[in-house]
Structure formats: C-alpha cells, structure tokens
Length: 180
Image 1 (spheres, rainbow, N blue to C red):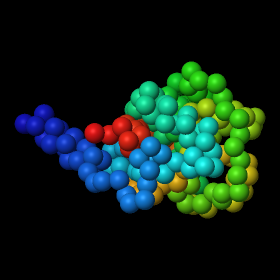
Image 2 (tube, rainbow, N blue to C red; image 1 turned 45 degrees about the vertical axis):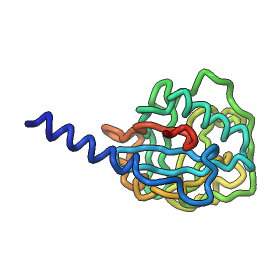
Image 3 (cartoon, one colour; image 1 turned 180 degrees about the vertical axis):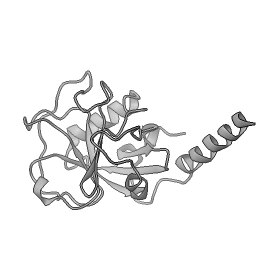
Image 4 (tube, rainbow, N blue to C red; image 1 turned 120 degrees about the horizontal axis):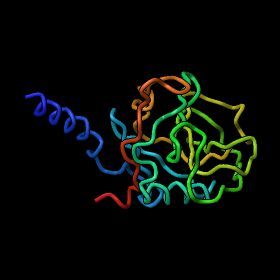
C-alpha cells in the first residue's frame, strides 16, 4: 500500500511539470523547462543579449548536466543558485571552458536569470541564479541570460540556506524544442 501511495504521489508531482503548452510568443529553441518537485519553471533565454551563455545553457540541458542538481545557495529576498552538476556545492562547473562575460544593460529584477561566476568576470560556466527580487547592484556586473516567464511561484517555494539542509533539486531541465 505504501508503494502505491508513493507512486501516486510521484505521478501527481510530475503531472504539473509535464502539463501545458509553451506560453505564446516564445521560441521553443530558446526556452528552457526547469522542472522542480513543485512544478515547471519556464525560462526565456535572451540569446540576443547573451548568445554564448544561452547556447551553453542549452548545451548543458541537452547533455542532462542539470538533471538532479541541487539549489545549493538560496537566499531569501535575493536569489536561488544552482547549476553545479560537478560537485553540487557551488564550487564546480562543466567540462566545457569558461565563458567571456556578456554584460548588458538588462536590469536584474524578480525572475531574472543570471550566470554565476567567481571574482573573474570571464569565469561563468554552468551555474546560474534566479532572482527573488530586484538586484540593481548586480547590473552590469553579471551576465543576464534569461527571464522566468512562468512558474516563479515554484522558485519561491525552494528551501532557503547556504546550503539548505536537504536542498531542492532540478528534476530535469530541457530545451522546449526537444520535449515530445
């Protein structure tokens, strides 16, 4: 009986993540689906603003690099960071080389997706963050790569901490064009 209830729970959690068409006006080649246990987050990549960073995120999604990766740094009122598929703790990257900064005048506001990096502006690789609130102090200092167009309420539910105890994870991240 316990196994049946667990299976029903998993199916119920997965159903919202797979439901619903692509929101109107989005290019499926430049849209990411980030599935969490709470639901699906839809991210519009700004390939006109940060083409190399957008391509990297799509490449890593297609390599399943982001699947099961924890949100290792979630600061209330600031942002949720993830994307360390190497170590899961914020110290790793991918097998691909670091990217040169693509700073822009696009402001950091609630729902903005930015690329994490070290103190070297040209060190972004795989990690990214999603803003909970406006963060004008980041403007021109970090690469804006996208924006959440739906599902921000699921990001708001992530467990807080640096790192959170038992952190939430990306279940799966996919390019919308690849979803059957």
